[in-house]
Length: 395
Image: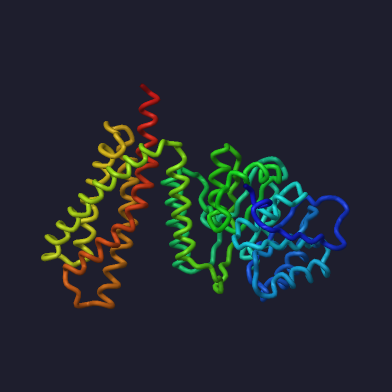
């Protein structure tokens, strides 16, 4: 069921609009943006009128706001030509975008964040590849070579880790899934949106994964991006939603029967328990002679290599030297995730509980290590199951 039918949508016609459908429909999804909405919509409209060569509409997709956003959106539609207000009664950025795109009559649909983080000079490069037929989808990228990005270290690190996890676990080729700056042909949107299940923050990622698996041409545009420091996005909740979405796409991509997946999970869990016990024992032995961070790093490296080798053979049934280095490289990515999490836990322990005993250290580190287990399964399964299927086809 697509977004045009699974929620209540109220669309008001723009006043003083063009008599024919516009070439581009730029959608701005908003939730409680009464402070910035009017100023940025007027700025965008002025740019489209004076600098943009194609006919364009601005659709304000109000995503169940509880402040004055919807009132301001309607006022802007009365004051400015070619502004369409759209109200959706349920929250979810993906729901707002899907509703706006599926009700648009433009040839090309696009969207950008209300804070206009991307320089407006990138609007034409964003839509030109789609209009010309060079690409089916065009996405802004903060991680492509040539991008100029101003944002905090925490957000930069999270973004790079997230997109690395996507490439390793799902095998995608695009670099930046979550940049709020995208365009595509309207017919492509109508074709893809019914296949996209998520209607919230993971919507962008799933849309691109579905597009790439369908063989569509995705052009990645390096952008100049200035992050909004006042953003109210809940990073932890968003990260958990994204991890659940990656899990769904990774475990469903091969269309296995549930028993086979269940068997893999059981064997992976057994290997994981053995690896965790080995890690704890090795850390205990090393801790008497080395600092906690050194003991942790050595114990993780040794058990990570052993874990990958064991899962390769026992969990996924892959034998022989084919793609051996790639499999261990994937295991080392999972190791890097675990290393970052556990060393962060050590720093926190030394700061807030400096007198903690090695027994407490082991308990905390073992618990944190378990968090990285889900990422390890996704990475190894994507790499090793692919190898097994390729080997089976060769027989």
